[in-house]
Image 1 (cartoon, helix red, strand yellow):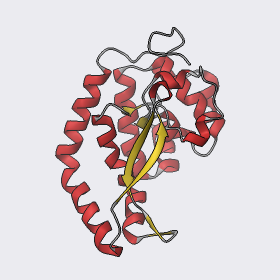
Image 2 (tube, rainbow, N blue to C red):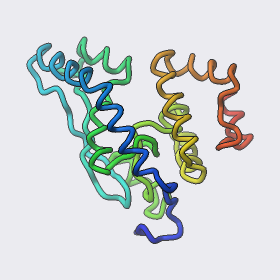
Image 3 (cartoon, rainbow, N blue to C red):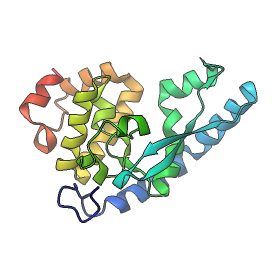
Length: 206
């Protein structure tokens, strides 16, 4: 297993930690009342706990517990859960993980323990904190291989402008729904070609 000094690791750009903390502070200030209301509504609907805790593998293969809103009860999606999933708010409690420096706002898709067992120990994604949002979450869809490629591409090209673009595009995807958001971004020419986009990957989205 490699560590922070391993040359294979994709080091974050200078200031990424500060970017994360500023983003968490802003998100909590703006969305704090929404998160509190969602927790209360989820608890009132069926009397269950509003949060669920999921084991994930983070930076340097260190396990951590990711937090999210509970969206199901008895195997069925609840009414509150359906709203949370549709708006993307189900993942907002992961701001706690970002504040604890277990995750970043933008980064590779978080890996479950099962998926991590299929990934080589020296995979560069272990050199970064997983993200609440990212290229794979935004554009990878259900294509795991393409999503993994997007994760690695992000790590090699990451910078503050790209992070800002991913956050903006992710918010647009929640408002417009992902397929519609992709078409909208293409029409605006908003895909960040100069920042990240090799020709073959850009072609996958057209």
